Structures are given as C-alpha cells and as structure tokens.
Image (cartoon, rainbow, N blue to C red; front, side, top):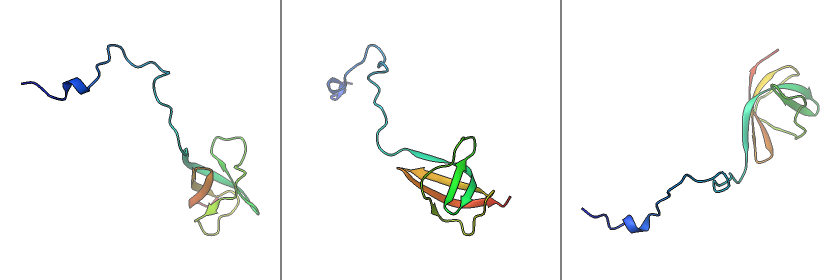
Length: 88
C-alpha cells in the first residue's frame, strides 16, 4: 500500500544540531517556596536564593508575617504569593 503523503515528509539523515533546535520564547514561569523577609514593603526570598525579589507581589495569602513560608509563582515578571504554607 502506498501512502500519498510520503512525498510531503522530509527525511532527515542526521539529527538536528543544537543551533537548529528552537529556543523557547515568551514568558518564563518560576514556581517555588519562599520565606517572607519583610512586610512593609512585602518582600519574599526564594529558598536557596541570596537576595529577595524586588517586585511588589500580589498577595493572595492573608496576614503573612516575617518568617512565614509561602508558595509563589513568578510569571512574565509578575510575582504572586499563592498561599502560606506555615507560620514560623
């Protein structure tokens, strides 16, 4: 049986080189856990990082305090605190 679409597919004899592999584009999303380092202004520091994020986060966790562990997401430059994991 002959496949009529066979002629439309280009056969590659060798694997694609690294320069041919497309690079990801668009927003980069970071998710993780962070400690609250300041409440006025609200700042969080991702676990393992040396410095807190400088952005003012959108806070979806009520009444976070310094030392709280929070779950966060950073998407396209917007920092969002999703919730508090526990109090210190």
